[in-house]
Amino acid sequence: MTWSEKHHKTYEIECNFPRRSEHGLGIGVLLGLSGGVALRPAVERAMHMRSPSSDVIKCIEQLIAFDTTSRNSNLALIHWAAERLEHAGARLRYNFNAEGTKANLFATFGDGPGGVVLSGHTDVVPVDGQAWTTDPFQADVRDGRLYGRGSCDMKGFVGVVLANVDRFSQARLREPIHCALTYDEEVGCLGVPGLVQEIKKAGVSPIGCIVGEPTDMRVILAHKGGRIYRCRVTGVSAHSSLTPIGVNSIEYAARLITFIHQLAEKERQSGAREDGYDVPFSTMSVNMIQGGTWNNIIPAVCEFYFEYRFLPSLSGDYFIDEIKRFASEELIPKMKAVDSRASIDFEQLLANPGLNTTDGEDIFRLALDLTGDTERRKVAYGTEAPFFQQIGIASVICGPGSINQAHQPDEYVTLEQLAVCENFVHRLVDRLST
Image (cartoon, rainbow, N blue to C red; front, top):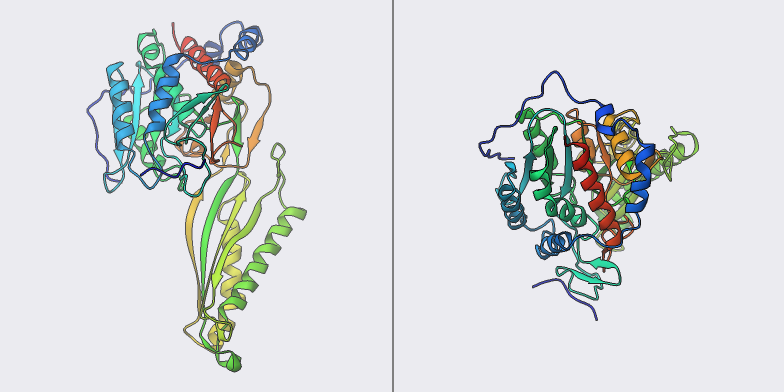
């Protein structure tokens, strides 16, 4: 049975955010005097926990019940989360989109410099056209799994964090814990830039940020950057028997697509390499195209969409600069020689930076120690982590669930993964407490 889908203006809340002092706690304090190895048996025991607390399940159920598909407002979810955080004693700061229909929320427990940000996005991808066997916006717990849209990406992590706000409040924190909730990650990380600017204005300087995207609770320190563009090739229509007076937009689009393919092949064969990725070089692809009106009319317009994913050590502008250069030097002059109205235009639809956290950063070493992980892992998909990095907050990615379940019908996260994540949060609180 298929279940069909159910029926940067900024505002500030008065709060006293601490300014960073000249003396912060170092990695020796965060990791503990005994070092990471002595703690790993406890981590191994936690890996065999089968279920999270009932509070975690309840929080995730409530989060899934909010239909925060990116086209919708997230304010109901933010209001619910804010009440829970404020009741536990957190200091809150909001940041809204220009229309006031969506909000980021930044909450702080504890005082002083340093500390850690736990960050997750509140929006989810659509369920349109997907064959769900249950209501995607009603959590379904069965067979050791919690099903529902966003359960994996990433309301599972957010639910674990919100279920533990009383623990944050009651702990004798020597460094603060910050909780960040963002909007519109799924449509291009549109909300997080406003959030990080609010953090910067507030003078908050954590040692690092943990973005809880699904990683099977393994620690990720790097990912590729990504760009998506729309290219519109405008030619001149004519009857197909009079080709010399027309400018065939599809043919010129094809030449440009061929050039993009050649760039991709160059990267595959001799481009920069970086170990740790499944595909250790930058990639490019044309993924959608449309053009023409009839089989005997020279097409006046052709549009296509292309993307590239680049290694974080490279400039994100390099490939689009090469593509634009080829268009302006090789194609447009020939088109305009026939008719001056011809043109090629590019529109950037998405520009996500890459993440390249070094393995010497405190937050990476702390996350490794809390999970018992030992590897330097990298992924090809993008996250909000680089935006925190841009304001000097080193970031890693670590959250419950598998990326293979993200965006899928009958999306789920296992209860065991949620239990491991909850233990991870408990251990973080202990590490930041006196």
